[in-house]
Length: 141
Image (cartoon, rainbow, N blue to C red; front, top):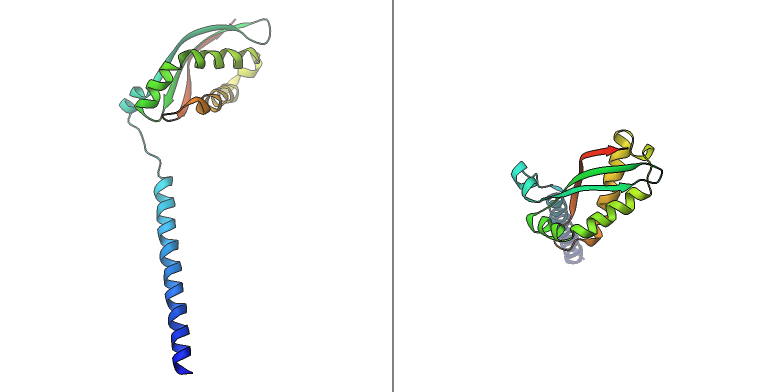
């Protein structure tokens, strides 16, 4: 009877220890994945792509001239995005054709446009992802 109690106690103790070790390893792995790599300005520039000025009609009677810089998460992704220049321009023109000048007003309007572009560009990417879209210049007339 004593041996059974001792054996069961040891098995329970070993199980609890194993569960604790597995939990600790999982927590450490999850925390490691959460640490976002901070890029230096040189790395940002190296992994970014300039989209030359695009002139297109907005949803109303107005037109827009816009220049963008798109930041990716690594140099290879930037090179891929540069090759996809025609796809980027197509997405920008399509997105702008559905918008009016009011949609682009204020900080919130511009951020919504940037996020919409980012969410449409990332599915195209094979060697990384788009981290941020910057409006470098724009004029609405």
